[in-house]
Length: 164
Image (cartoon, rainbow, N blue to C red; front, side, top):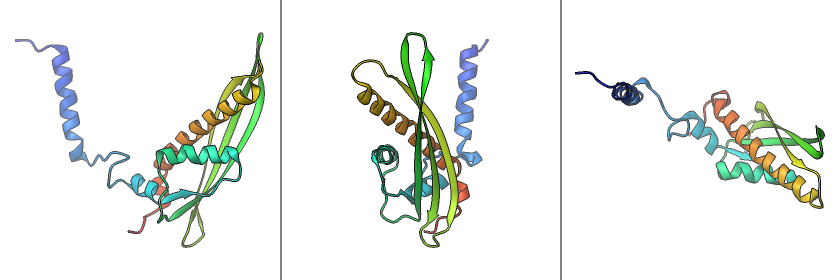
């Protein structure tokens, strides 16, 4: 009797999945993971302008603000606008960088400095340039917030032990 390739692949995949808990695998967002502890102990400072407000809201959609936090994140959002050479179309590329400092609220020491970059673009033709620019900026803040959280999860071990 011959076992089909699909059945064999499925059996191997199932065996690997069942073996993950025994190897110490824990999901990134798992209850006892280091990154979930860091995510619960981080709050971003208040924004100074509309762009920073959009960024803060994008981050808070993914990690709600907490009351008792160990780290306050000071951040700076920098945007630049560059024209793109596209034949017959006026496009503008919006490039953004967010630099963040994680400050331990007890010691006031900067524990980690992180930076993320991203870009998006919009068409600058027509009578809705300001609307299109704001839409591109909001989309960019979403992209940068996603990258910030991904970087935070990846660097969560660098923030040290979180006291309970």
